[in-house]
Amino acid sequence: MQNKKIIISAITLVSMALILGNGYFYVLLAQQLASSQETLTGTLALFQDRVHDLETKLSNEKNDKAVLSNLLSSEKSKNEYFAQQISGIQGTVNILEKLSKTDKELLQKYSKVYFLNEHYIPENLSVIDKNDTYNKTEIYQIHTKVQPYLYQMLRAASSSNVSMETVSAYRSFGEQASLKLGYKIIYGSGANQFSADQGFSEHQLGTTVDLTTKDNVPFSKFESTQAYKWLQENAHRFGFVLSYPKNNQYYVFEPWHWRFVGIKLATELYNRKIYFYGIDQREIDSYLISIFD
Ligand SMILES: [Zn+2]
Image: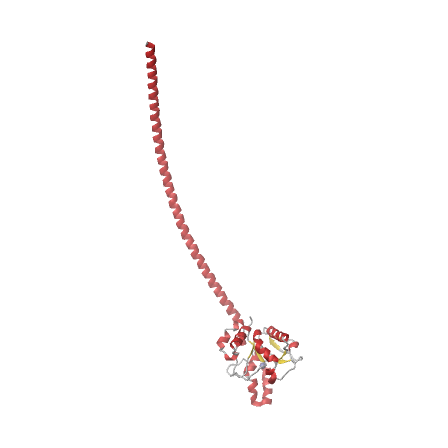
């Protein structure tokens, strides 16, 4: 009985010790937990601060980027503007350069008021092939840049069974003066009627030809030839125009006398059914830039 008591007491004591021990353990655990929570809260706060900092930085970076991007696009449009300006200026310079190299006399109207200077000589002259000239022993010259247009025109006519020859082309001031003198001797003062200064100036330019047929009809009959008919319909395609058409108010009718003014102007005159001396010099001048295009 005594032993039983002892055993119970021992068990009780051990149980109590165990309970007390566990309690102490729990207290320790709770303390540790609280301390961990504190640490975590601190760390969390640090992280939150850090995140906030980063967010602020990111938003600043974004703003900076937007500013830079605006700057870049504004610089780009400035550059584009300058590029356009430069290309515009370059275009103008090119036009001016081309114009400065183009002989202004080439599209000048000549009259009793405005003559070509007696010392005027075309920039370059080329000899016309003998197959295309009337007198095979004579040398006919034409403005070098007009020569290919003349050849193309004569070839085109020939392929339409209309053959033509050049009977007069470039004439110097001296040659013209003696020619005119000759006419005067034959026709007296009437010579001014068909060999006056307008036609003369055009031949001195080197861009003008008098044409005849292979069987050499006289000038007075040229009007009724197939050649004249063909020229009226086609010469503009090669840049040539009839300077003095029938019933014009400036000069006698010269169906054989064809002046090169460039395809663009010749076509314009053809389409509008007007003639070179019938339009304003200022309008003619606008075609100078494209005379050899
Ligand atoms: Zn002529």
